[in-house]
Length: 254
View 1 (tube, rainbow, N blue to C red):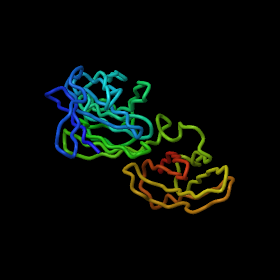
View 2: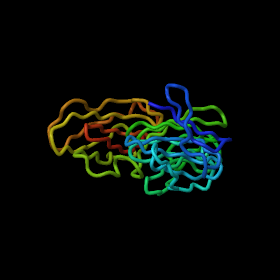
View 3: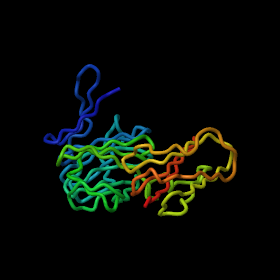
View 4: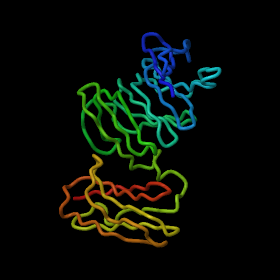
């Protein structure tokens, strides 16, 4: 029910109620704060733009106090929260970071070289990534670039910080065979119990290319064919969704 505002020049965070009155949340210990993010449980996080530090504001709103949780050692554009972790843009080093709540920092995407190359996270390039938004499960991110005003999308397909790295959700999506594929590939998935599923093939821009399965399926192993004749060469992502979570596998088409 309130708006939280960070002042880059004033080095404070304030709340604004519906009455338009500003109330200090934190007015010391920050250095050029810009990014703010909330977790679903109400925890508040703020990032220092120039020092690259991410803080948690403990005790908000009764007795707020800063607690340092991570140091990215680069200028931080903004923050987003999704899937139990934070995401931050490194506007100066052209990377996007994942930050676990225990402070562990991982480069999610970007080589560190400025550019606009699409592709897997360890090959993609960014042009001063700044704004960032995340879906609730943290599996899809949207990043704006200050360098060229472009909007980029990241779909997580590696085991770092994705649903595939989390405890078994009762559904397993196995690696495509063959991979790389030319003409046809097979996707196998295993359900521990009858459940409603959706199996899609999307490209790296998140555009749906094929619907491979949908509806309630029985427990056990299922196989679906991916006809690749109409697909351009490149990398695609198989996405298996159930009520319990999301599983992904990467498929390369020749």
